[in-house]
Amino acid sequence: METYDLIIVGAGPAGSTLAKALEGSGKCALLIDKHAFPRDKTCAGWVTPSVIETLDINLADYGNGRTLQPIRRFRIGMMGQTAVENDHGSVVSYGIRRCEFDDYLLKRTTTPKQLGTPVKTITRKEGNWVVNDTWSAPLIVGAGGHFCPVARLVGNGPGSHETVVAAKEIEFEMTHEQAKACEARGDTPELWFCKDLKGYAWVFRKGNYLNVGLGREDNHKLTDHLQDFVEAMKTKGKVPADLPSRFKGHAYLLYDHAGRALLDDGLLLIGDAAGLAYTQSGEGIRPAVESALLAADVILQAPDFSATSLQAYADAIAERFGHRGSVTEDGFQVPGWVKMPLAATLMRSHWFTRKVITEKWFLHQDVPALAANS
Image 1: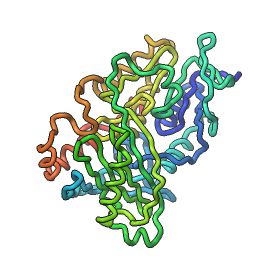
Image 2: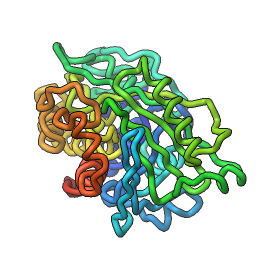
Image 3: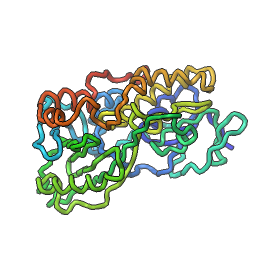
Image 4: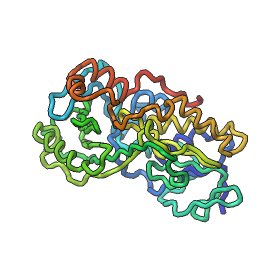
């Protein structure tokens, strides 16, 4: 039996950020992930300057041999309407491929790793968590996304108002012919909101790579909405007529509606495992990174790993992201006050699509970057 101070299940941005933050602290951690890296990861794939700052990523270094698409504009509309395009005048985000981004972050940490290793069992023994009857630690951290095996240990809170978003998307490298015919511009992602406001779709070009997808809160209608959207984009020339058909699915919880507990005795959840995706955009990368840093601070300062000592983490999450339960509507991306026909009018407004949807909901420009030593 190998013993550590903590075991981190999931080596994506949340897990690797936590591992990196704990280096040199005297805490001995183990990173476990069911995949070998680099691995395919379903995600639209863009990161804001605040994430770049928090992670201290050198853009010149990262862009050497990896996809790094500067974003200066957004086209936003409601399906069936004409989109509004806003030029932000500078780079406001970066397109990345998650297979490259996650591998880059993971390689920056010297923490011991067990990759390509599915977690089959997690048991409690003499105050420690034992994983696969092989590794033991008094603290286990779930960083493995919505279906993380550590998250299953805490379940969902009683009477929780869950909104599980289901999404399907595809990312592929276009052929020369496809790239030449594709009218989508790399520096201008397109966001298209569903008419019922229960989700949105996107077309995002990153060099010769194209990412197309749609996320909604009602999974049973997801495929129909996606097919309609893809056909509309083909007609507009935004996606190739011979677009691959093998879309991949994933799911996540929206922060304001998630009822999943963040901690228990000897247990913490970070990132999508904790249900931290931003409610209006569904973005999970920034909350994943920031929750990992907040968790690292608590782990280093806590006198023990009891739920009482770890409560400081839940307090820090609430202070950073707001208190859960403050939203009472069922709405997915768009708050309940944005109703039809008002929404149709707002989606035609340059001010609303830029100041509210893009800068506030998707880029969170009003929230300063979280310092890595906060």
